[in-house]
Length: 349
Ligand SMILES: [Fe+2]
Image (cartoon, rainbow, N blue to C red):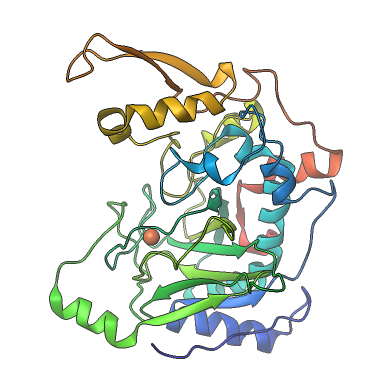
């Protein structure tokens, strides 16, 4: 594994020289790790506060609760997209990466900017091994560049560093988007050998943010235990020479506090379809943890369970407006949230 370089941004007002250094590293290597530069806590909430008060659950989230969510641990409850912590951590990510993206946009001649929604992650189990792959936002237009951001929300303790890692192949990203979108797993053996030769395990300490080209080849995350789960906020950004908005339908979803269409271009489901086929009992267990508004009866028409009815989670988490649980923000947060995901000129961000 190769060594990699880390950067320390001292406050939000980075010098032009520092901005240039960070943007060039991102452009050439495909990623950059920096310390958060702000800590928005207008409403004094933390990710842990959220995990203790998820309105879709009957009781606080424990390590037992992430069954059904899947190995990645993305929280797809409507509340996960609208809890004040989501807004504040997205603002922290934005403030931290903005100078870098501004400079990168200048280097590549792109003018339009959009912050894109993504999920909060609570992972208690290691993900099963994946192959080298790239992530690609669906709905990308020619010359768009999409970036992923990884904000480590773990807390360091006396016997745990809280470090999260990301294994990638620096320099193998592309400024050209894959217009088909989706996860792409190359099968070309020479390519995979090239990735392995430069493979770098990037560590992200608590409070640090990694910004990366979404299409940098990478592998699934490191080992995780239930005692020390991974907590992180992922975010995303688009630079473009188009002024059109990616997924304008999210405007209405923000209003009703429904799950947002996230970077992958998907309407986030509460479980994968294969759960219906393979693990009905896991789905029933999961439904038991949810409030009545978030579950429904499901009758099997075919297969070994044909004719049987189970109570399962609703496949899509209902909007908070529809279940009378909308969050109320203070006026500052309300105003920031309303325009946060709109497309803007990078000079106006
Ligand atoms: Fe990935």
